[in-house]
Amino acid sequence: MEKKTRKQYSAEFKAKIVKEMLKEEKTVGQLAAEYGVHTNMLYRWRDQALAGLPSLFSDQAGQELAEKEAEWQKEREALYAEIGRLTTQMTWLEKKSRAIFK
Image (cartoon, rainbow, N blue to C red; front, side):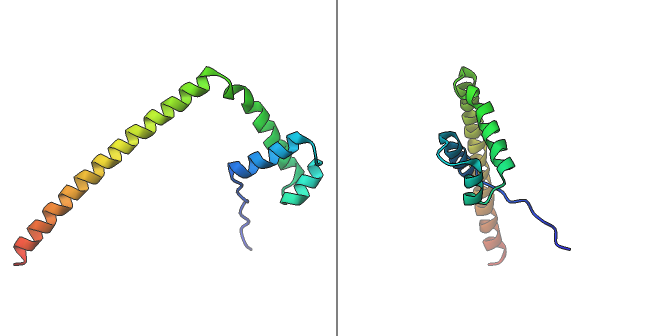
């Protein structure tokens, strides 16, 4: 018996459908049929989007974004430092191996 895997949808895909739902130009049933997604899933995405709207307009959202950016920058610097360290080690080992095998 094959194991079923859940279909994953991108955030962009979900947002596109929720925008169409909010326009109310098509019924939820029409959108579900058009995109091959169950109506319950569409309602869940809509409710999730509406629940998140207030946080978009708060100062806290900007602060959280700035914190994530700083964290990302710190991680990036650490990765570049690691690349530099590994490059130095590799160069040293190459020199040593050439000296040994001459």
